[in-house]
Length: 324
Image 1 (cartoon, rainbow, N blue to C red):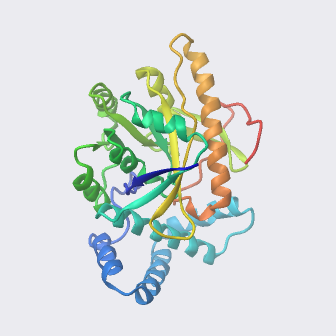
Image 2: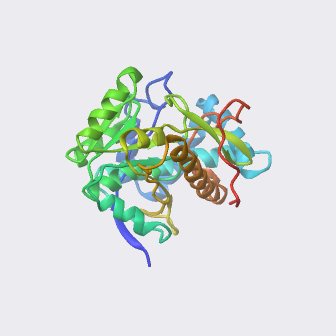
């Protein structure tokens, strides 16, 4: 049995050194207009051509895509693989923009862990919801907003980001943003949001603004990941749950959503015991994520260097007892 959820689309992060999304300032609006008014037989070839232009004009993202795909595909990647990666991202971006302007996106919550995740979402207790730059997982903030939960999305403020504007217009009473452009004030903003009863939604794959990192097994190596979400959980006594989404088959305005088990800090246990349990929880989350990445390698939307292999000095989680 599956649970049906209505959901729409959030934001795309940008690299901190260049606080804007790639492309012209009018790019998002033009994509929405063209997708709406051009016939599909004309729009899709134009989108394919535009993707080739993006591949040519974004050498850094192209190189990172090719390096990642070589790991995910377990073979040397080709320029056509990179184009497919870029084009899959373009399709995902269109879905987010369409959802932001009001097109309904229906989601199917996979039965594994669905009951506990849904109970947490429906509860009044503020929580920490994690996700990754994978598939339609940016939609977490919309999912929570449509279920009536107040959520603050942690992200970098960038230019050329109509998806943020559309989200604010559609869910302004339920969804807000905590901007990390000024990390010095972030902890105070986090504390204020949690004490106001808001839940937090944050990405847990990029390292740029993470104060706490640890290493976990992912894509064939022990790699460094942000671990801040669990330190916040212990600091504020909040449960943690992760959620990722992939396009349903056949393609359309529908996503399959995969939730993790819920991690709840034990107030009677020591900090070290809770952190050990948190490491096991996050490793299980990454086992689930890797299984999806292996199945859908083009949905990993980090056009940055893959999470680095850990140095010996980085805290490590136990090796998982099973592999994806």
